[in-house]
Length: 578
Ligand code: DON
Image 1: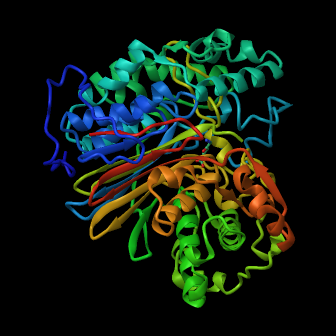
Image 2: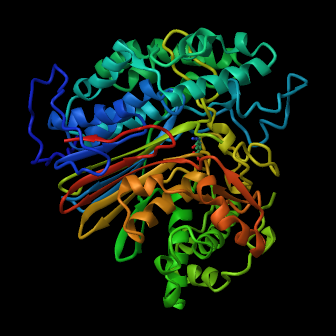
């Protein structure tokens, strides 16, 4: 296997590979690290990646270590039963690659599987969200093993060691986990026989149903399976006793997963989308994510607007002012209307990607924007037809300008609630990201078209937007978020905060945000700026709603004086590095 990112000449091994390297520097939020930084939404996941950097690993080694650690410390958000997207920038080769290890529809899935009756009975209304039928074929283990073998430099056993240690030793339960537990126990209590139906989830991940308190510890059930994967690689998950146990658990809950679905699951390598913004190269995720297209379309629209209105550049309009929020909102309404209408997995559907990210198209959109007026939803397009939950984003940058931006998901909090009882894998509920019931919105209120209809082997459209910004051939920023469609708007605003408003990563991820996704036709504004900008945006014609928190974003930057990172205070992570 090639070792594309092997040349991490700056990183020297400080101790024997067997023991953890505790000699890390701890930088404050804005104090830079010199050699490498990892920014996840849990401090111990960042630290797992940083530990691997200190052992001489490259940015992909660190990313894989972070991802496996997240499966232990953020089980409500991502993990072995889910999937993700990893965007990599190799500064030495000047090469960008995107690894797509998103879940895919099982081979027995079909377009109308959630609207048809089954065995003469109608399916539960939430069949695409909870239970066995909600799960897509997990891609996580295949993707991480592929990333490591192809672009990493260290052995799997070294890279997975921090995750295994965290699973063996247990971790302190944090506020995010307590909140996820509280919400999930309440949701289970509202379902008929919810606690019994999803007993393995309650036992392994919800403290047996007893509310966690501060100071309690969580012991992940994944230690044994992680060790097997460290020894045997992907086959430990996709073939043999674990695969058999996964299929049995899925089918016993009404699912259609087969051994063949698992054995044939492979990551796909995609060419990332690229665009220029503010003189820099923006690299982001192509379909089956909508994130890169919507992000680039919006950035292009802003550039086209500024070319036409040089006295109304975004930074001249000001950060989070009525005018700048209005400009962003109008650009976003067009981008999300196009998302709903055109986007789906390009391996199955015809998607006009080139047109949507072209400068000509952006100029057409910009010419329709007015700073004192908004329009009803059908002006932007038509379709043929909360709190942070089941996703986690992290970034890694090193001093040489290599970077990884990676977002992983099991969709909503604790995914489908189905847990394989012996090995502890939580099944995703990614099938709800398809147009599961044509004409109806999904759990995030997103309307979607036939392009995103279910088909065997097809991937559900995603909003995950792992993004890297490159200047002079080296990564200068990486960003992304969790939060459904709010991922796109959060990533956009964080990048604008850094590129246009001169903010550090921690300022950029902390600043209040807004969100509009075209449908529902409402503008969400975080409370900190609701009274400042809300009334005038209502006068322009927006239906304004307050939000307590819009998405959770992690970002990192590299400049001459070092590497900085910001983990979103909305979720409670913390960067680590050296
Ligand atoms: O791929 C997607 O777009 C969704 N599965 C993401 C869900 C999400 O971000 C939930 N929350 N934190």
